[in-house]
Image (cartoon, rainbow over all chains, first blue to last red; front, top):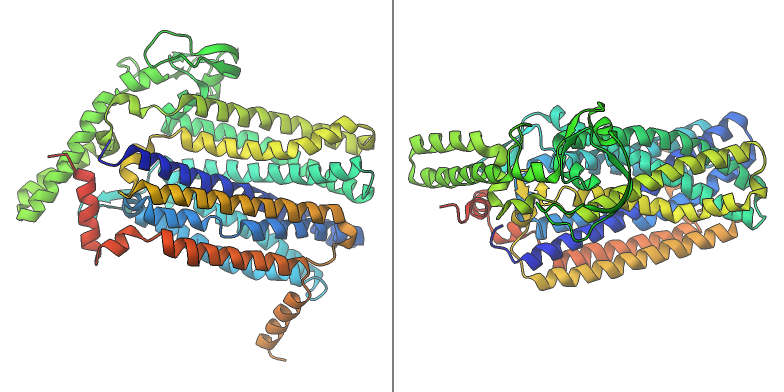
Length: 513
Length: 71
């Protein structure tokens, strides 16, 4: 695949993964906690109960810490686009530019303006205007996420654009196709609702700690009722958006789905693995059982993917080697077609240089016929089309397993709180505390599934990661990888230290941020 | 007092009454300095912007990358 040093590609990947994973530690808590404080403040405005004001202000303070520490951590990825991923940046420029520009403008005006009112405006603006500002911060933060996920969704399923061989750029043909790309909005809904789940776990975790320490009892119980109610609702919603997302993956990225399930042999009525240990000796095209151990639900994957018990789900072998019966092209055939697209692009370029209009026209026609397979033209062998199966499988199952546990946890905690038995059930309070870091594990596992599962593509079927990378020396990429590792770890330590200090102080002393 | 004056006073009083917020703003300022002044300037040039003078040259370069080895 190309001319670039493979270690450079791996370090560039590692650097982007590091920044994205660290950035995603801060973002989901902001997305969800803004809504929880908005709900708490609504209760305050409705009831006039000063306890709710104090409760809202405490959580708002923790939100401020998370927002400040996480602020601008995502900008590093934009730096990386221009330096490490310059080919990619150029090729997607017009598609990425519009959503990210909208995100920047909206984030600046909505969040920055109303954030100030939210923090400085207590007792200075009317209660209702303050409440409106809090809700607008919540909505604005989440809309910012929409634009980022529209851009990500386009990379997973590029629509609404056309590659211009004169400029080597994708040009937007239909903004609405990009915005309403099914891959984008299912990802958006699943991602933001997972942020709400994390924020609910955060409030429950901190409040459970207070109850275990027998302090801030009234405050903690009230916070838990709000967070567990919100958490239960949004985690059920998260389950449905996860189902939508999986169905979309089955259509747009069947290889990712097969890797998520460790499915090597496709079949009708494919089972879904509830729990499994992959066989590390399994190799592509051998007959070894992919699992050392598994607990599977018959027909589950067919049902999940196509909402039919007998639906055929292709496995990794069929997706690599093709299947006439199921009309699946082999990767080798796609590579042939991709190479025709690459050759046509080269012919077009040469014909343009020599001013041969007829040759240009023919080359362009050939390119358009095969451009859907362009990215395959850069693969060296069909095996390169298979993502890392073990990482994708375990990340996906970790996310699903934890997501299921969170639904049960929210239900149990809400039930115990409503029946006033929460303080007696210390194991449940401990479960609440321990589930907070597990919420972060689930968040990161979700992104690992989404991004590792779509390898080798930077843009699905169009641009493999190796072609997207800038041809740089590896050492500065290694150096900046470690710089970022140190910077982000310092920020994380600052976040944890400031947060724990504020939590230890508690809501009583927390009048001003 | 004019609207602009009231907005200015709102922000001034808000910043003045901050406690933890002052520490957070300090972290934000240090972070932005490290990101934009140190990291961006020293390590993250926009490769295509710096290497070429215009978009035609940038397009040619990327097309060369995409078609290398094709003919």
